[in-house]
Amino acid sequence: MAVSLQARLTRFRDHLERAPLVDKRVHTSFNTHPIIHGYTADFEKAAPVGSRLFDEWVSVTAAYIIERYEVRFNALIGIDSGTIDLAEVVAETVAHKTGRMVMSIRTEKSKKDPPTYRLEKHWGQAVLRTMPVETALILDDVGSTGASCAAVADILRDEGVPDIRVLYSMQHSLTIPELDDREVPYASLYTETIETYTPADCQAYGLCARGIPLDHRVTDRATS
Image 1 (cartoon, rainbow, N blue to C red):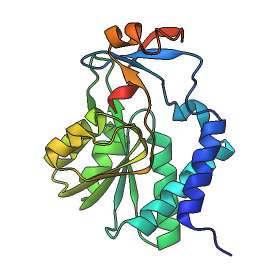
Image 2: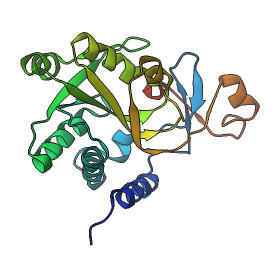
Image 3: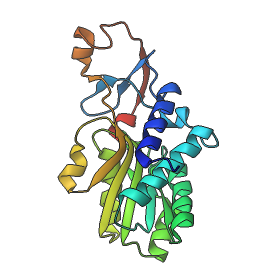
Image 4: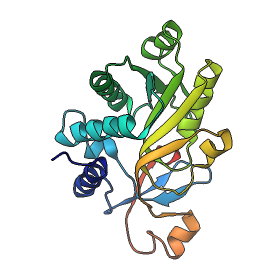
């Protein structure tokens, strides 16, 4: 008997929790504006390329795209650095299962604060300008504010892509403000709230007050 997509998503979520996806032994100060404190969901660490969990991540993402979208995407966009490899393998998987050509387009992230994005020269700009894209799906691992995907969506619109959507592997806020502002549709494999606090609230009653050590390496992963 075939396993339903929902059952596969639930199993994938369970596997991520056991990996674990979120290391609750430490918390991080995220390089957002304003700065917030919270736990980090790290897909690259939990499901590295070549692992069985990465293969499952690819499989459930491809299945979700095929079963849940009526739109037939002809390009998948990977966000540097979290989903570059995911987008490439998922594009190959969707193309193989549907018999349609699906391109993979790469982005590059700057080291600025906050970071900026652009299409990678050879596997981004060149691909997009060689083969016009009508429908693009941006893949990102964790969704909160939507800043990363919004920046890439703006680039794609400037390049003339008319239909742009976003699929998060995990969405940890009920809404994605930056995408709502741009009217970019988004979805996720699953939603799970992750604790976040302002620095003052963290000290008063949050993770800091509970004695969870702070990892002082500032990260921008919460801006996805």
